[in-house]
Amino acid sequence: MNCQEFWNQAPPSCAPGGEFAVHLTNCPTCAAAWDAQRNVAAGLRRMAEDECRAEAPARVEARLRIAFRLQAGLAYNPRHRTWLPVFAWAAATAAVLVLAVSLLRVHTPQTAAPKPLPNTAILAAVEGSSDAAGDSGTAALDGGFIPLPNVEQLGPNEPADVVRLEVPRSAMIAVGFEVNPERAAEPVQAEVMFGPDGVARAVRFLDETF
Amino acid sequence: MTTPSPETDDELLMRMRNGDEQAFVSLYRRRQGAIYRFAMHMSGSAPAAEDVTQEVFLALIRDDCGYDPERGSLSAYLFGIARKLVLRQLERGKADLPLDSSSEDLPRQETAATDNPLVDLTRKETLESLRKAVQALPRRYREVVVLCDLEEVDYADAAVALGCPIGTVRSRLHRARGLLLEKLSIERNSRAAVGSWKPLRSFI
Image (tube, rainbow over all chains, first blue to last red; front, side, top):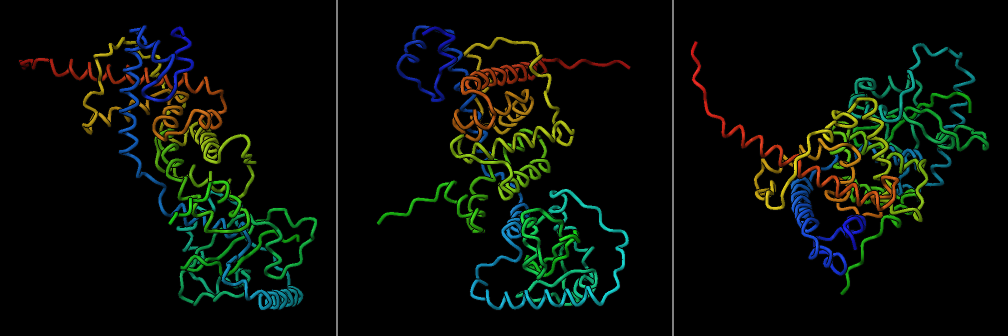
């Protein structure tokens, strides 16, 4: 084994055996360089030990959990599985109500429609968006938010966070919208209102074509 | 009594794909630290590392990057996404470090095996010197040192994450360690030189 072969095939371990050990015995230059590299590797291990507790801040996990819930389906909660029939009825009622409201209400164009943001910015807004929905409760519902079934609605003075993100169009079925099955997998922009406990309370879809 | 073996990443991923939030949380907690530290070392910026960590796991949630277990481990796949995101941030100039520092162009200095600048690495300041030396490495060397030496990723996984052959990982790692040694020797010599300076009396 020559020097080139040694360095091309040298194992990561600190004490190479077999052919590698023989080469180190016969080649003082490689042996010196190998020792030096071992020292650097040992220093780097100490550095790694020193830093092993460095982690992403807890808020990242909180944001990702929200994103996961929304991706998995709005207000997904295993505890509510036994409430599926109730949920179905509530969804049907919500659909009728939405239809009734949309028939009765004169369609007013939305002024100053919020500009869509990239997903990251949206998630980053989780902490800082309380102001936008700070008036919470009734004001938010006036803003076109649809209360989610099977969850408590926010009180008038309860803080809320509004997060805008993309959800599958099929998620609209959960709040009573009819969705074209061919477009069910398409992403749609939605604003979701979360209570202080992190549970989704209401949703507003920004895409009006279902 | 035998303790149940912890679930593999792939098992957790499968449960996660079926909507199991706890599986996602377990997977996140298992892998986020390494991803965060990798992004931190590569970008030199805590906010950038936070963004990258979040984006990596968002990509996993959205399943829009096509993880294939036959091509490598989930860990390697996550490092690969993190690397691409860090590079994007560096190109945008969002992170603190330049894309490629010119440190490779520093004058070479031969270091003898006995002239070891890491002998007293227990000292905090020496660890700090090493940290700075790692951050000053050119990107292609820095990433391999962070993966293989700091995060103890094996060569095969590092090759998947970096998108290069194992031989390249190996040779870059040797070169990177050599560069680190040179940087630390230069720093130590310059300190010694400063220490040997004699104060001059100034006449005003």
